[in-house]
Image 1 (cartoon, rainbow, N blue to C red):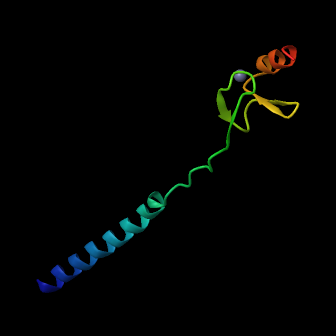
Image 2 (image 1 turned 180 degrees about the vertical axis):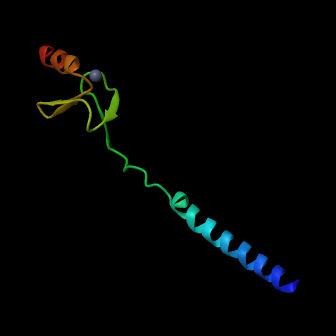
Length: 74
Ligand SMILES: [Zn+2]
């Protein structure tokens, strides 16, 4: 009787160990993308990520329309 109990305990421990190994990949923290610098539109002043928008004449604009309006106003 004690043998069966021992086998049951060992089996339960083995199953618990395997389950904890299977769960490990889910627990790894996901790395967030690095924050992107924000720049202001030279025409309207709205802020947007540096990678977006339009660059012209050393200025950055939120859209091509604002770039064109900025150019025509000068
Ligand atoms: Zn703008």
